[in-house]
Image (cartoon, rainbow, N blue to C red; front, top):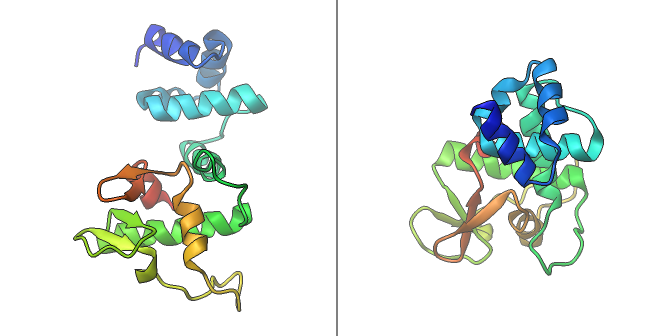
Amino acid sequence: MTRPAAEEFVGSAGISPGPFLDELIKARLGRLAASPQRLRAVAVQWDSTGDLPESHVEAVSSEIDRLLTELDRGRSQPSLSAGRRRRLAARLGAIATFSGTVRFARAAEAVPGLLGVSGLPFEPEPEEPGMPVTPADYGEVLGTDLFAPAPDASVAFQHQQYAEFL
């Protein structure tokens, strides 16, 4: 993306593009501009905190954390801690990456390529022994902005890179 295009794009998000892009270049993170989605996420982070990620990996991690805090509109506040949501998202990412499943559903639908929460593992996370994972736990994670609506009343990772990163 050219600098004028990046300035227009970042400015459309209500963020002052000049200072942000100058900081991005100074931090040697200009390659983040190759992805509009990533550029927007980093611009939002910089606008709210004044900090830039130190690397591409940190940018993706920060973006995932932000997406996991944004729930479906109209849903109640999260009942799971941020750490548990992140661990369950990582579990879903591993399932998506290694099983070929790309869509998840809260209901147990028998549709090829779709995995209902009842088909997911309920064993406790190693960090939380004795605390089994429930369908509601998975449902809460699937209701975050990390997932986008997909066919057959299902959701899928917003971007395959998130599943692979987790």
